[in-house]
Image (tube, one colour):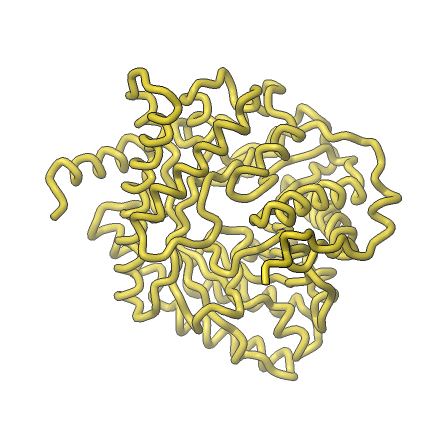
Length: 451
């Protein structure tokens, strides 16, 4: 039985501490939409998505009204489109336009899955899809794309890493008139999860059911508020408080997922219990780290504090849900976190420190803007470094980086909404070109041999 105090506590979290459900995401398999004719395949895709997700937005709004819980985004993830392209051939941008039309028809914020999985090499359709990404992101505004270039089991496909540096740069150039928004919807992964509800990296894995509902919770503001009221206590006490708070946050996600599953008549997949920040004041992972005792995010001690936060969130959240998955931990997207933005502006938070932080957090280098003259080779090397952290540590890492065409270090990109403002960060211009040009594959580490 839920007590009156618990109900009042949840209401306060929602009204005063920015607690929300960041997304309910419907995953839809498109494997049965494969066809040797790309136009027939696109028509099958449109019919399946608009049928399956017809009531997704309406159900989300009904749950919001019933429980008073804000659900910020309603989204769709689909089977990696490169798999369908391998069967159909043709112009992959047709698939991009079809997915955009599906998103508009059912009213979702984003649709993810313009994706390819190339950790061990390129299959039919992969290269053609990857090469089309800049154009696909230029002609759409709700489409998200991702490419998995490495895994602990397979190693790192350095040919794909080299190509993705070029693709990111080309995408930025294609959308330079819109603050280079293209790369903000493109994620390069190592160890990509198949059940991620968060954009831009969501796709529907081949091991998933035909249709499923995943939930991504939020709540950095709730954790920060709890810590701000804590008097005394050592770091063990801090971790325990975070763990208990994460339990409460995740329990709300479990409720919403179960309700959405029942109303839509599809299986409930997972709750992703990641702390997902926004540019709004009081909804920041960086501010949690500062509440723990750092003068500013990026100071020495930041990596240790983030490791503790990530671990406590997982421990608390896993007890509150029947199925935890996705990414699950603490996100550190620079442009989407008010505290990260301030720390990057002041120079306290540097790219090298962010890379160290990604060894212990949920994902990787996320929503980072770099000078417009950053070469494709440097972008590829940044991806390689991040993938190596994921590969060796058997965790998901990713890069979502934006070359700010025509802008320099110290200037900013303005995206608005959840994407926020991206201070342009300093990069190391020493050339990695010779290493990147070698290509090939970085072999999987010894810890991949677990059989």
